[in-house]
Length: 330
Image (cartoon, rainbow, N blue to C red; front, side, top):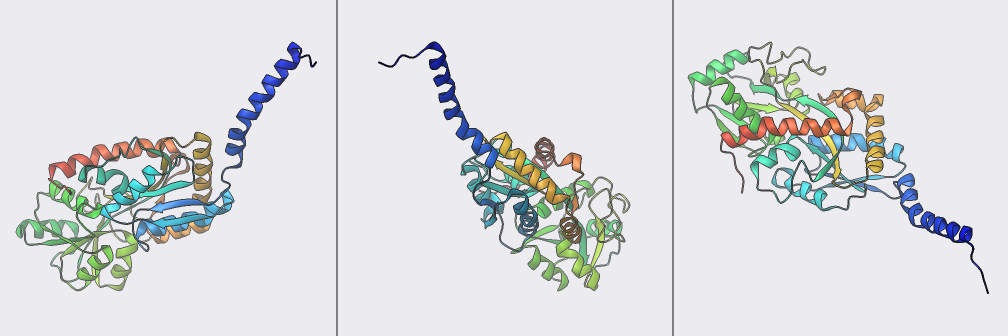
C-alpha cells in the first residue's frame, strides 16, 4: 500500500499547478512561434500598404517570424477592419490602420463593431499632412488667392477625392467650413487617378498626401499652395504651412497606427510594440518614411496608450464634421 504524506500531497498539488500554468507562461515567453498576418484594409500600392510593408521589413527581424501582408480592400477600409475585429486575439493578426479606417468610417457607416473598444492599440507610427494642390493654370498662386477665387465662384470649383468619406473628402468639408466656401467633390478611383485628372486640368484641386502629390509638384505640372499642418514637411521645405498661408488651424493629417483585436494579451502587445518601436528607430525606415512625407512620432508617443488617447481625440474632432455635413454611406 502506498502512503501519501501531507508533504507529498502538497508537492503533488504544486506540481499540478505548474503543469497547468506553464503552457500559458511558455506561450507568452515564446510568442510568436509562427507567422503573423498584418491586415492592410486597402489595395496594394496605396499609402497604408506602403507603410505596412516598410514596417514589416524590420519588425520580422525583431520578432523572429515572417509578417505576411493581407490586403483586404473595400468600403473605405471597413471590410478589412471587420476582418481584423473577428480575428483571434492572440497576436497573430494585427491591422495597419489610418485616420480613415479607425476614425472616419465610424461616422460614415453603421458598423457592427466599435472602433474604440474592439481593438487593442499597439503603436502610433507616423503622421503626414495633406497638401493643398491645384491645377497648374488655376488663377491662384497662394492659399489666400485660392480661397478668394472659391468665394467668387461658388459651387463651380471641383475637388478630386479617392471616394466619398475618405480623409481628403472630409478634409475638404472642413476647408469649406473654415473658409465659408462651396465647391463640388469629384470621387475618383483613387488618389492616383485624381492626381492625373488634376494634371490634365479636368478638376481644380486635390488634397493629397506628399507621396502622391510631390512628384507632380516637383515636375511643375500642378501647384502646391499649403501644407495642412503646423510645421513644414522635410520633403518640401518650400511649401508654406496653412498657418503661414493665412488659414491657421486647418490641420488635416494622414496618420498610421497598428492595432490588434481586443483581448490580445498585454505581454503579446508589449512584444509587438517593442518590434514597432525598434522599426521606427531604424535609419532606413526613417529615411523611407521621410520620402513619403511622413514624420515618425517621437519615441515617447509610440506607446499603446498614446495611440488609444489620440484615436479618441480624432473621433471627437472628425465625427461632428462628418455628421454636420450629412456625409453618410449605407
